[in-house]
Length: 276
Image: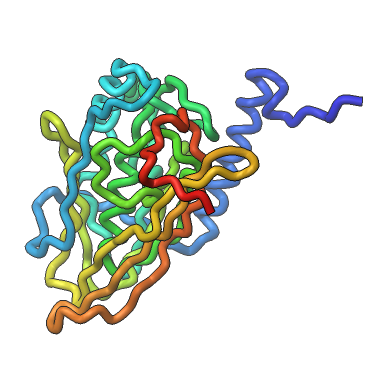
């Protein structure tokens, strides 16, 4: 006897019903959470820069058509404008989808690269994970508290000009897989985003310097072959440094990576393979 199919597996109508049921559950959870969500946009920069970052818009990813990355640029431009200047007051919560909204063709989004599970394919509004990744990177370099995060579980591409530790990104999928953080400090913070010709650019700002600065580091990075395939293994830490003395006051484990390699293992750098 074959296993009973879930509602979402029973054709397009079943999938639609299942998806919108999850939307309603998410909305109910949001209403009952008691959280105060940030909504106010003001693109005038706050005076103190906490962290700035840029990430390449076009990367030569193994097995990915460049046309999908062209679509990603347009999608990022639309979504970045919806986040640019967001002010998160003390006690307020930032919600990625609460601000970006439903990314549809009607809103101007086009085909881009979408990651579903461990599969890569074309999809409307593909590429918005890059924006969510940047938000998370900026927040990691601050004393704010992440309240919802969904890690990418697999190593989908070889590294190419990586500027942040592996695994420090986040998955987002409207609207049930969100990224959220809470401003647990006593001062407002602001996120700014814009696109240059080559990069997605972002800044985290506030009204005065925080007492600590942060350094995110990846340690013991290596690859290992296991019974069911190759894995990328490392640990990511956040080092907390006192701004006045320059002394490290804490070292926090952010992520213990054990990610299955989904690309051709021949692309793994030989010097990073460990046999134990």
